[in-house]
Amino acid sequence: PRQINRWPSNESSEPPTDSPRVLITGGLGQLGVGLAQMLRKQYGKENVILSDIRRPPTEVYNMGPFVYADVLDYKNLRELVVNNRITWLVHYSALLSAVGEANVALARTINITGLHNVLDLALENCLRLFVPSTIGAFGPSSPRDPAPDLCIQRPRTIYGVSKVHAELMGEYLHHKYGLDFRCLRYPGVVSAHTKPGGGTTDYAVQIFHDALSTGHHECYLRSNTRLPMMHISDCHRATIEFMQAPESQLSLRTYNIAAMSFTPEEVAEEIRKHLPHLRVTYNPDTIRQTIADSWPVRFDDSNARQDWGWKPAYDLPELVTDMLASIHEKNN
Ligand code: AKB
Image 1 (cartoon, protein in one colour):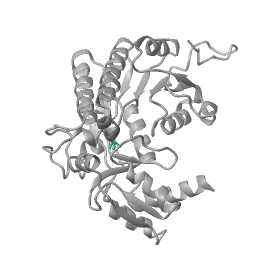
Image 2 (cartoon, protein in one colour):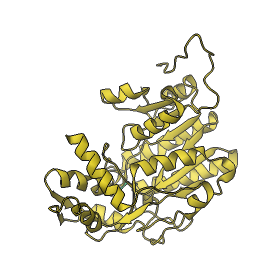
Image 3 (tube, rainbow, N blue to C red):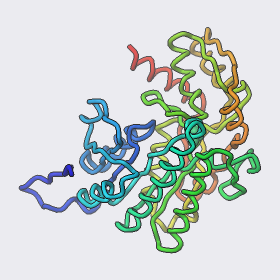
Image 4 (cartoon, helix red, strand yellow):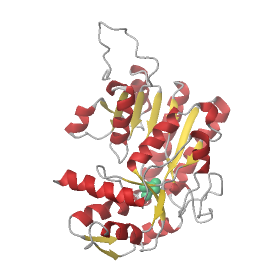
């Protein structure tokens, strides 16, 4: 195995005790690289290891430690955790809602078997374990406006079922064995530099790229489909603040986090304030529209606000301004 961290020989051979040592699985998806960078700013480059089964682009190698890790290979994961003295595990490896429906067997394996591996590993090594959940953990029989933390959850996607399973397994192991399990239900995440990988909320990223390139976006959801959404930097900050919160402040182990809710037509209208010629046509696809119609239109995140001080920084106008500027800058 590759030894990541070489402590300078003229210094103590022990890592700093006040800094967590973080491993991120599924690190090359929409969220991993950005989270790693934010954590590295606080805890140092060498204390945050990004992992995936894919080969990263050179710039990711240059940012800090990257290793191969397959969440289905327990021994490989264990070696990484032991050799690198990992104390926090952020488990981002998962198939999202739309791609999961197209490949249920693979989604079940990655999202459920992979989760069992990291739960076992976290228990065995006393890790603080973060697993994201989602608005997709709710279904047609859940209260939708707003969805509270605790309510009926009967999702109709394999993604949602696997996320409810993750919430329940983590909480069970917390209550039975004291596992430091932490879970946030993310809204759709909107990011300029990384693309989402096969979700139902992906249009909310694509529309910005289309607005700046062709000026035309064909949306696979109806114009009035309202879903909870969040700017990626709020999502990273929520994750880090939640991971840093003392256990005594947590009355729950799974929290909703919210920032805004919008429809395709509303985000298009906001983009038109900057790019008046944006044209959007609607061609709803049955699978993603049915999924979206079963999800909450708004999240109640009052427990997160109360317990550990969650507060988003971006509303729709700030999100749109930032997305257009960031994508424009990247392309020019
Ligand atoms: C998806 O659309 O599947 C994800 C999510 C909301 O969990 N972005």
